[in-house]
Amino acid sequence: MKLLLGKPVAQKIYQRIKPKPMKIAIIVLTNDLSTISYLNSKIRKFFEFQINAEIIKLEENISENQLLDKINEINERPDIRGIFIEMPLPKQINPLNVFSKISPNKDIEGLNPLNFGKILYGNEFIVPSTAKAVIELLDYYEISVEGKNVVVIGRSIIVGKPLSLLLLNRNATITICHSKTQNLKEITKNAEILICAIGKANYINRSFVKENSIVIDIGTNYVDGKLVGDVHFEDVKDLVSAITPVPGGIGPITTAITIENCLKLCSLD
Image 1 (cartoon, helix red, strand yellow):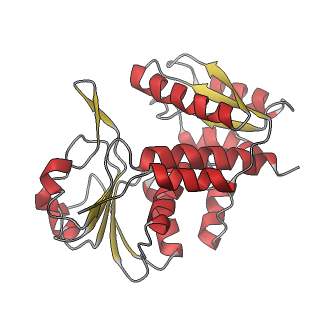
Image 2 (cartoon, helix red, strand yellow):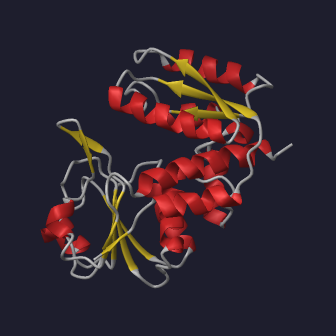
Image 3 (cartoon, rainbow, N blue to C red):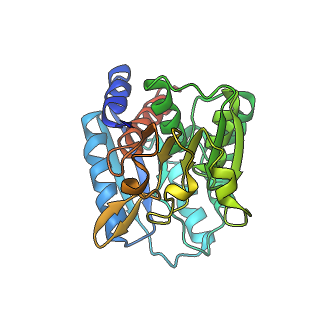
């Protein structure tokens, strides 16, 4: 079993980007301690690349109109070059309305419909960072997806959907599974590459996995204060040919891509 570590992939990304002084706004709508902790670690990394992050903390019960007004206010600030909204959004907020309000030229996560739609045409200038992180991992470890049967579990707008498009752009044969999928195990056991992004701790065990397949775990879940993935690592590690750990897999690459997206936006002068 080969361990697909994210740190060397992230280091390769950092080597190709050049620091440039800029300021971004990060909108936070949660008091979740694990989210805040992860955000603080990202901000420290941003600082290494001369990216100054202004944290805008808003109440979790904020109305959608109030949030849209705040985004519009940030859009009009010339000192802010990028906008990032820490996910997930509160239930009362419509993601389409929020991401549509972010200026395409300040859209760090590539979730404005204008930027997102470009993926359909193979334009991947700004792409959701976690989805792009998976592609960077595959490229680094020279794992070709062309013609491969790839199953993605999860259809979120920030991971599952954009990742499926990126894989399709690389000629993979894609199956997207979700909470309404029937006979899930029958589908996943045929996957040459299984990608999990469902947010359920240790949900995927060896009964879901094909022997000698490649498993990429995007899940971030906390169990008794410990970070674990969607895949039960200990249960499947001896069955697969390669697997990402959690932590230490996709996470470091995601941060690197977020930084690269920031600097790409800054280059749009």
